[in-house]
Length: 120
Image 1 (tube, rainbow, N blue to C red):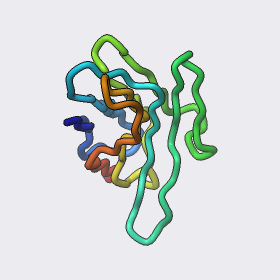
Image 2 (cartoon, rainbow, N blue to C red):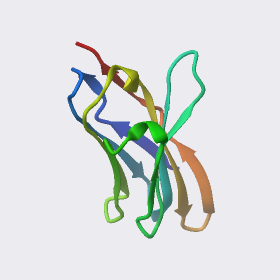
Image 3 (cartoon, helix red, strand yellow):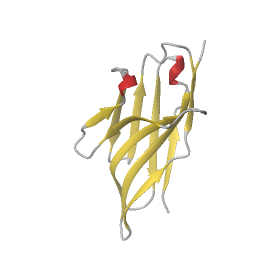
Image 4 (cartoon, rainbow, N blue to C red):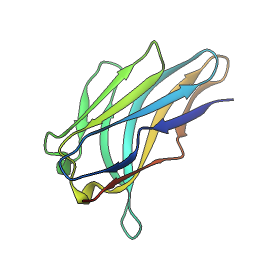
């Protein structure tokens, strides 16, 4: 019915950049709100960033101005631009979205995650 697919993860050196994408595939859908979370084994899941319909954004305290969340509603896709990456940013990053589906209503959806590794 509906899938959220993350992409853009990979291996980068400290100080490098990555842009993560979160694409919602489906027919007659619209994203209401979108968020990025991250999780490392042994740690609790962290909220990285959120963006609402009006474009208002929030970020976790650890972001410190390094990341930018954005959205392209015509493509049903969200993005997370990550700059000045640090080893502590290493984690699996998950996209989460509240999505309206025609004839079904609104539901909460999660992607499968994309791995980000920051290492020399």
